[in-house]
Image 1 (cartoon, rainbow, N blue to C red):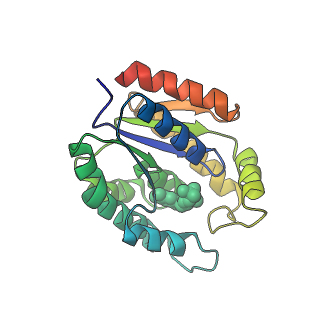
Image 2: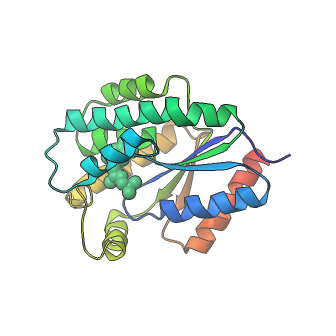
Length: 209
Ligand code: TMP
């Protein structure tokens, strides 16, 4: 029986290699007969893709409260319009970033109250929660260097923030993984993409196949 109706999210700081790993995991799952839907946040709906451009654009003047609510709004749309029906239809949904990004970036990074972010996430998601969250853990200095190479030195609104911001994001990811050790699987993202992909596949098979 192929894996069906599972919701897997990938999290991590800038340049951790999430999109590469989403693609590799999707290929492996499809090779085993699963129907896979690949999503990214913000994005995956018309609203989400429009907001993605606004949220990432270096010149956008957005206060932290508005930023948190915009991410939550995109998530609410994605959950209702895409994730719930896809899981119900038996797809495996792979999402590049989800609830934990808002806790890491807007609560730890921006300094907003954690309980307000948790409430926004509950409003956006209802009862939907990832079955597995893969955290690609990487020193921000390393990740920002990789992201800069990838984007030819251009920084989006988040990549341009000071290192302290990205260190707080990483520390919050570690805290979240400790809070929910069943949901999280932490991978050292300083390894080669091939090695990381092997480690992730091993864990996905162990849990679901
Ligand atoms: P990325 O998916 O290409 O990394 O770009 C998304 C950016 O948005 C990234 O810098 C992290 C940031 N972000 C938040 O700050 N909060 C969120 O809730 C999400 C989903 C992303």
